[in-house]
Length: 112
Image (cartoon, rainbow, N blue to C red):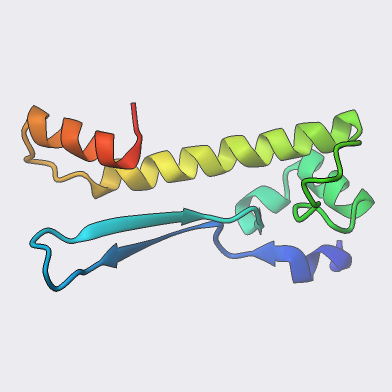
């Protein structure tokens, strides 16, 4: 487990606000990084895969020869990151916005 410590991140999704001087509304940036977040590092499948594959979760895209455990670990990580981004995008919406404003925000962020 000690070998995982340098690869564990406190967070894998961060948020920021973008301000453009000539544009009235600010924008919101949500950034997800393929990382091994603390709260997910203890999940058995990811921990085992990270120990067995020292490059996880930073394998190159040219490496298409993954075993079932590695595939499952990346799938679990992707599902986790997707949920974190969804939560961040829902928190970014104004609570008192109209349906039209929410649809515009969803269109900008690519949400459904």
